[in-house]
Image 1 (cartoon, one colour):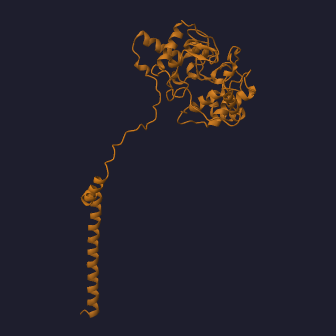
Image 2: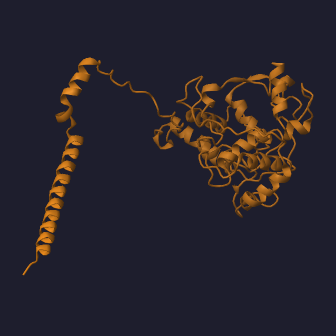
Image 3: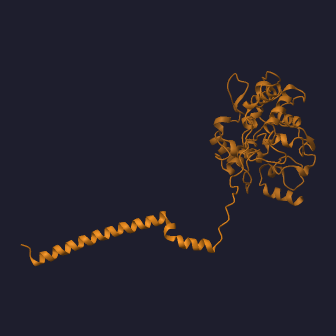
Length: 354
Protein backbone atom coordinates (compact mmCIF):
# COMPACT_ATOMS: atom_id res chain seq x y z
CA UNK A 1 0.00 0.00 0.00
CA UNK A 2 1.40 3.39 -1.07
CA UNK A 3 1.75 6.13 1.44
CA UNK A 4 0.81 9.69 0.83
CA UNK A 5 4.50 10.42 0.52
CA UNK A 6 4.90 7.70 -2.12
CA UNK A 7 2.02 9.14 -4.15
CA UNK A 8 3.55 12.59 -4.05
CA UNK A 9 6.93 11.20 -5.19
CA UNK A 10 5.27 9.32 -8.05
CA UNK A 11 3.42 12.44 -9.14
CA UNK A 12 6.63 14.41 -8.92
CA UNK A 13 8.58 11.89 -10.96
CA UNK A 14 5.82 11.71 -13.54
CA UNK A 15 5.71 15.47 -13.81
CA UNK A 16 9.48 15.61 -14.19
CA UNK A 17 9.47 12.98 -16.90
CA UNK A 18 6.72 14.78 -18.78
CA UNK A 19 8.58 18.04 -18.47
CA UNK A 20 11.72 16.44 -19.84
CA UNK A 21 9.85 15.00 -22.79
CA UNK A 22 8.18 18.30 -23.56
CA UNK A 23 11.50 20.12 -23.29
CA UNK A 24 13.19 17.63 -25.57
CA UNK A 25 10.47 17.89 -28.19
CA UNK A 26 10.58 21.68 -28.00
CA UNK A 27 14.35 21.62 -28.39
CA UNK A 28 14.11 19.39 -31.46
CA UNK A 29 11.47 21.63 -33.02
CA UNK A 30 13.53 24.73 -32.30
CA UNK A 31 16.66 23.14 -33.76
CA UNK A 32 14.72 22.15 -36.88
CA UNK A 33 13.40 25.68 -37.21
CA UNK A 34 16.89 27.14 -36.98
CA UNK A 35 18.26 24.72 -39.57
CA UNK A 36 15.39 25.49 -41.93
CA UNK A 37 15.95 29.20 -41.48
CA UNK A 38 19.58 28.74 -42.51
CA UNK A 39 18.68 26.64 -45.55
CA UNK A 40 15.62 28.70 -46.62
CA UNK A 41 16.16 32.16 -45.15
CA UNK A 42 14.08 33.79 -47.88
CA UNK A 43 10.89 32.26 -46.42
CA UNK A 44 11.42 34.08 -43.11
CA UNK A 45 13.12 37.25 -44.23
CA UNK A 46 11.47 37.70 -47.58
CA UNK A 47 9.82 40.97 -46.70
CA UNK A 48 12.96 42.40 -45.15
CA UNK A 49 15.08 41.30 -48.12
CA UNK A 50 12.56 42.80 -50.49
CA UNK A 51 12.67 46.05 -48.55
CA UNK A 52 16.46 46.13 -48.62
CA UNK A 53 16.56 45.31 -52.34
CA UNK A 54 14.05 48.05 -53.03
CA UNK A 55 16.00 50.63 -51.06
CA UNK A 56 19.50 49.78 -52.32
CA UNK A 57 20.71 49.38 -55.91
CA UNK A 58 21.85 45.94 -56.94
CA UNK A 59 25.65 45.53 -56.78
CA UNK A 60 27.59 45.74 -60.05
CA UNK A 61 28.68 42.40 -61.44
CA UNK A 62 32.21 41.38 -60.41
CA UNK A 63 34.96 42.12 -62.93
CA UNK A 64 37.51 39.32 -63.45
CA UNK A 65 41.08 40.34 -62.62
CA UNK A 66 44.31 38.65 -63.58
CA UNK A 67 45.73 36.97 -60.52
CA UNK A 68 47.90 34.25 -62.01
CA UNK A 69 51.62 34.97 -62.34
CA UNK A 70 53.42 35.00 -65.65
CA UNK A 71 54.00 31.53 -67.00
CA UNK A 72 57.52 30.13 -67.01
CA UNK A 73 59.23 30.24 -70.39
CA UNK A 74 59.52 26.88 -72.10
CA UNK A 75 61.33 26.08 -75.32
CA UNK A 76 59.49 24.30 -78.10
CA UNK A 77 59.67 20.50 -78.12
CA UNK A 78 62.51 19.30 -80.33
CA UNK A 79 60.27 16.38 -81.33
CA UNK A 80 57.99 18.87 -83.08
CA UNK A 81 60.60 19.58 -85.76
CA UNK A 82 59.68 18.29 -89.22
CA UNK A 83 61.73 15.74 -91.13
CA UNK A 84 63.18 18.37 -93.47
CA UNK A 85 66.69 19.69 -94.16
CA UNK A 86 65.94 22.65 -91.89
CA UNK A 87 64.75 20.33 -89.13
CA UNK A 88 67.83 18.15 -89.54
CA UNK A 89 70.08 21.20 -89.26
CA UNK A 90 68.44 22.31 -86.01
CA UNK A 91 68.68 18.80 -84.58
CA UNK A 92 72.37 18.67 -85.45
CA UNK A 93 72.85 22.02 -83.76
CA UNK A 94 71.29 20.68 -80.61
CA UNK A 95 73.52 17.60 -80.80
CA UNK A 96 76.57 19.86 -80.96
CA UNK A 97 75.42 21.83 -77.91
CA UNK A 98 74.79 18.68 -75.88
CA UNK A 99 77.85 16.69 -77.05
CA UNK A 100 80.34 19.39 -78.05
CA UNK A 101 83.34 17.36 -76.96
CA UNK A 102 82.24 14.36 -79.02
CA UNK A 103 82.47 16.39 -82.23
CA UNK A 104 84.76 19.33 -81.44
CA UNK A 105 86.76 18.39 -78.34
CA UNK A 106 90.32 17.06 -77.97
CA UNK A 107 89.14 13.73 -79.36
CA UNK A 108 86.37 15.17 -81.53
CA UNK A 109 85.18 13.41 -84.67
CA UNK A 110 84.96 16.68 -86.67
CA UNK A 111 87.56 19.08 -85.24
CA UNK A 112 89.82 19.39 -82.21
CA UNK A 113 89.16 22.97 -81.12
CA UNK A 114 87.94 22.90 -77.49
CA UNK A 115 88.86 21.74 -73.99
CA UNK A 116 86.53 18.75 -73.74
CA UNK A 117 83.63 20.49 -71.99
CA UNK A 118 80.20 20.68 -73.62
CA UNK A 119 78.21 23.84 -74.28
CA UNK A 120 75.51 22.19 -72.19
CA UNK A 121 77.77 22.32 -69.13
CA UNK A 122 77.03 26.05 -68.94
CA UNK A 123 73.73 26.17 -70.88
CA UNK A 124 71.76 23.44 -69.15
CA UNK A 125 69.36 21.09 -70.92
CA UNK A 126 70.75 22.20 -74.28
CA UNK A 127 70.06 25.82 -73.38
CA UNK A 128 66.39 25.29 -72.49
CA UNK A 129 66.31 25.05 -68.69
CA UNK A 130 64.57 27.94 -66.91
CA UNK A 131 67.22 29.97 -65.05
CA UNK A 132 69.80 27.55 -66.43
CA UNK A 133 71.66 30.15 -68.53
CA UNK A 134 69.30 29.35 -71.39
CA UNK A 135 69.07 30.68 -74.95
CA UNK A 136 65.60 32.20 -74.63
CA UNK A 137 66.66 35.79 -75.38
CA UNK A 138 69.29 35.17 -78.03
CA UNK A 139 67.14 35.22 -81.16
CA UNK A 140 65.32 38.39 -80.11
CA UNK A 141 68.43 40.36 -79.09
CA UNK A 142 71.15 39.47 -81.62
CA UNK A 143 72.80 41.16 -83.35
CA UNK A 144 73.42 43.64 -80.55
CA UNK A 145 76.07 45.99 -79.18
CA UNK A 146 78.24 44.45 -76.47
CA UNK A 147 80.39 46.65 -74.27
CA UNK A 148 82.96 43.90 -73.77
CA UNK A 149 84.07 44.09 -77.40
CA UNK A 150 82.81 47.62 -78.01
CA UNK A 151 81.16 46.44 -81.22
CA UNK A 152 77.87 45.12 -82.52
CA UNK A 153 78.07 41.35 -82.42
CA UNK A 154 76.13 38.76 -84.36
CA UNK A 155 75.34 35.27 -83.11
CA UNK A 156 78.38 33.78 -84.85
CA UNK A 157 80.64 36.05 -82.81
CA UNK A 158 78.78 35.17 -79.63
CA UNK A 159 79.10 31.42 -80.22
CA UNK A 160 82.80 31.76 -80.95
CA UNK A 161 83.24 33.78 -77.77
CA UNK A 162 82.05 30.71 -75.88
CA UNK A 163 84.46 28.48 -77.77
CA UNK A 164 87.36 30.80 -77.04
CA UNK A 165 86.51 31.50 -73.41
CA UNK A 166 84.29 28.90 -71.74
CA UNK A 167 85.69 26.08 -73.87
CA UNK A 168 89.18 27.62 -73.89
CA UNK A 169 89.61 26.81 -77.56
CA UNK A 170 89.31 28.22 -81.05
CA UNK A 171 86.32 29.51 -82.95
CA UNK A 172 84.48 27.89 -85.83
CA UNK A 173 84.41 29.41 -89.30
CA UNK A 174 81.21 31.30 -90.02
CA UNK A 175 80.23 29.14 -92.99
CA UNK A 176 81.03 25.78 -91.43
CA UNK A 177 78.28 23.20 -91.17
CA UNK A 178 78.70 23.12 -87.40
CA UNK A 179 78.45 26.87 -86.89
CA UNK A 180 75.41 27.16 -89.11
CA UNK A 181 73.73 24.30 -87.28
CA UNK A 182 74.41 25.79 -83.84
CA UNK A 183 73.12 29.20 -84.92
CA UNK A 184 69.98 27.59 -86.37
CA UNK A 185 69.34 25.67 -83.17
CA UNK A 186 69.91 28.61 -80.81
CA UNK A 187 67.65 30.83 -82.90
CA UNK A 188 65.00 28.10 -82.93
CA UNK A 189 65.06 27.83 -79.12
CA UNK A 190 64.20 31.51 -78.76
CA UNK A 191 61.94 31.84 -81.79
CA UNK A 192 58.77 32.58 -79.81
CA UNK A 193 60.20 35.38 -77.67
CA UNK A 194 59.26 38.82 -78.96
CA UNK A 195 61.81 41.61 -79.16
CA UNK A 196 61.84 43.70 -76.03
CA UNK A 197 60.32 40.93 -73.90
CA UNK A 198 62.10 39.10 -71.12
CA UNK A 199 60.14 35.98 -70.23
CA UNK A 200 60.11 34.54 -66.76
CA UNK A 201 62.88 31.99 -66.42
CA UNK A 202 65.23 33.57 -68.94
CA UNK A 203 68.95 33.73 -68.23
CA UNK A 204 69.90 33.34 -64.58
CA UNK A 205 68.03 33.77 -61.31
CA UNK A 206 68.38 36.86 -59.13
CA UNK A 207 70.43 36.67 -55.96
CA UNK A 208 70.78 38.90 -52.92
CA UNK A 209 73.90 41.05 -52.87
CA UNK A 210 76.28 40.41 -49.98
CA UNK A 211 77.14 43.24 -47.59
CA UNK A 212 80.63 41.77 -47.28
CA UNK A 213 83.28 40.34 -49.54
CA UNK A 214 82.64 36.83 -50.80
CA UNK A 215 84.93 34.39 -49.00
CA UNK A 216 87.00 31.73 -50.79
CA UNK A 217 87.70 30.20 -47.37
CA UNK A 218 84.03 29.76 -46.55
CA UNK A 219 83.41 28.70 -50.12
CA UNK A 220 85.91 25.87 -49.84
CA UNK A 221 83.84 24.37 -47.03
CA UNK A 222 80.73 24.57 -49.20
CA UNK A 223 82.60 23.00 -52.11
CA UNK A 224 83.91 20.08 -50.05
CA UNK A 225 80.50 19.39 -48.53
CA UNK A 226 78.29 19.85 -51.58
CA UNK A 227 80.28 19.96 -54.83
CA UNK A 228 83.40 17.83 -54.50
CA UNK A 229 81.57 14.52 -54.93
CA UNK A 230 80.79 15.41 -58.57
CA UNK A 231 83.55 17.81 -59.57
CA UNK A 232 86.49 16.24 -57.73
CA UNK A 233 88.81 17.21 -54.92
CA UNK A 234 90.95 19.28 -57.27
CA UNK A 235 88.11 20.52 -59.46
CA UNK A 236 89.13 18.07 -62.17
CA UNK A 237 85.63 16.80 -62.96
CA UNK A 238 84.65 13.21 -63.68
CA UNK A 239 85.09 11.50 -67.01
CA UNK A 240 84.31 7.87 -67.73
CA UNK A 241 87.36 6.03 -69.03
CA UNK A 242 87.28 5.86 -72.80
CA UNK A 243 84.68 8.62 -73.12
CA UNK A 244 85.32 11.87 -74.98
CA UNK A 245 82.96 13.71 -72.64
CA UNK A 246 82.90 14.64 -68.97
CA UNK A 247 80.10 13.30 -66.86
CA UNK A 248 80.72 16.29 -64.58
CA UNK A 249 82.90 19.10 -65.95
CA UNK A 250 86.14 20.40 -64.45
CA UNK A 251 85.73 23.67 -62.53
CA UNK A 252 89.35 24.74 -62.57
CA UNK A 253 92.67 23.60 -63.98
CA UNK A 254 93.91 23.52 -67.56
CA UNK A 255 90.81 21.73 -68.88
CA UNK A 256 88.29 24.19 -67.50
CA UNK A 257 87.06 27.62 -68.62
CA UNK A 258 89.58 30.43 -68.78
CA UNK A 259 89.62 33.78 -66.97
CA UNK A 260 87.82 35.50 -69.84
CA UNK A 261 84.68 33.36 -69.50
CA UNK A 262 81.41 34.71 -68.20
CA UNK A 263 81.47 32.31 -65.25
CA UNK A 264 84.71 33.88 -64.07
CA UNK A 265 82.62 36.79 -62.81
CA UNK A 266 81.51 35.54 -59.42
CA UNK A 267 78.07 37.17 -59.65
CA UNK A 268 77.40 35.08 -62.76
CA UNK A 269 78.73 31.92 -61.11
CA UNK A 270 76.74 32.56 -57.91
CA UNK A 271 73.48 33.05 -59.82
CA UNK A 272 74.17 29.95 -61.89
CA UNK A 273 74.80 27.62 -58.95
CA UNK A 274 72.03 29.10 -56.82
CA UNK A 275 69.30 27.79 -59.16
CA UNK A 276 71.05 24.69 -60.47
CA UNK A 277 73.64 23.22 -58.08
CA UNK A 278 74.30 20.86 -56.43
CA UNK A 279 72.71 18.21 -58.58
CA UNK A 280 68.95 18.25 -58.06
CA UNK A 281 68.60 21.95 -57.26
CA UNK A 282 66.09 24.08 -59.14
CA UNK A 283 65.18 27.76 -59.09
CA UNK A 284 62.19 27.07 -56.83
CA UNK A 285 63.98 24.47 -54.71
CA UNK A 286 67.57 25.70 -54.25
CA UNK A 287 70.03 23.70 -52.20
CA UNK A 288 72.40 26.58 -51.44
CA UNK A 289 71.76 29.79 -49.55
CA UNK A 290 72.64 33.05 -51.28
CA UNK A 291 75.73 33.39 -49.10
CA UNK A 292 76.85 29.85 -49.89
CA UNK A 293 76.43 30.56 -53.61
CA UNK A 294 78.57 33.69 -53.40
CA UNK A 295 81.24 32.01 -51.31
CA UNK A 296 81.55 28.86 -53.42
CA UNK A 297 81.78 31.09 -56.50
CA UNK A 298 84.63 32.97 -54.82
CA UNK A 299 86.40 29.72 -53.98
CA UNK A 300 86.11 28.17 -57.45
CA UNK A 301 87.22 31.35 -59.18
CA UNK A 302 90.18 31.73 -56.83
CA UNK A 303 91.64 28.50 -58.22
CA UNK A 304 94.14 28.32 -61.12
CA UNK A 305 92.82 28.14 -64.67
CA UNK A 306 93.87 29.03 -68.23
CA UNK A 307 94.56 32.67 -69.09
CA UNK A 308 93.17 34.60 -72.04
CA UNK A 309 94.44 37.77 -73.65
CA UNK A 310 91.89 40.32 -72.48
CA UNK A 311 93.72 43.42 -73.70
CA UNK A 312 91.00 44.21 -76.24
CA UNK A 313 88.11 43.69 -73.85
CA UNK A 314 86.15 46.69 -72.57
CA UNK A 315 87.61 49.44 -74.75
CA UNK A 316 85.47 51.80 -72.68
CA UNK A 317 86.58 50.88 -69.18
CA UNK A 318 83.62 52.67 -67.62
CA UNK A 319 81.45 49.89 -69.03
CA UNK A 320 83.17 47.12 -67.09
CA UNK A 321 80.81 45.18 -64.79
CA UNK A 322 81.20 45.74 -61.06
CA UNK A 323 82.78 42.28 -60.65
CA UNK A 324 85.09 42.29 -63.66
CA UNK A 325 88.33 41.52 -61.81
CA UNK A 326 90.93 43.04 -64.14
CA UNK A 327 91.91 46.71 -64.28
CA UNK A 328 92.25 49.42 -65.23
CA UNK A 329 89.01 50.74 -63.77
CA UNK A 330 87.20 54.03 -63.97
CA UNK A 331 86.71 54.01 -60.18
CA UNK A 332 88.96 53.96 -57.11
CA UNK A 333 88.42 50.30 -56.17
CA UNK A 334 91.16 47.70 -56.61
CA UNK A 335 91.12 44.38 -58.44
CA UNK A 336 90.56 42.37 -55.25
CA UNK A 337 87.39 44.26 -54.41
CA UNK A 338 86.21 44.06 -58.02
CA UNK A 339 86.66 40.30 -57.83
CA UNK A 340 85.28 39.44 -54.37
CA UNK A 341 83.46 42.54 -53.17
CA UNK A 342 81.89 44.07 -51.22
CA UNK A 343 80.26 45.21 -54.45
CA UNK A 344 77.65 47.69 -53.26
CA UNK A 345 80.15 50.60 -53.00
CA UNK A 346 81.30 49.89 -56.56
CA UNK A 347 77.73 49.74 -57.85
CA UNK A 348 76.87 53.01 -56.08
CA UNK A 349 79.98 54.69 -57.50
CA UNK A 350 79.07 53.56 -61.02
CA UNK A 351 75.54 54.87 -60.50
CA UNK A 352 76.80 58.25 -59.34
CA UNK A 353 79.09 58.46 -62.35
CA UNK A 354 76.16 57.86 -64.70
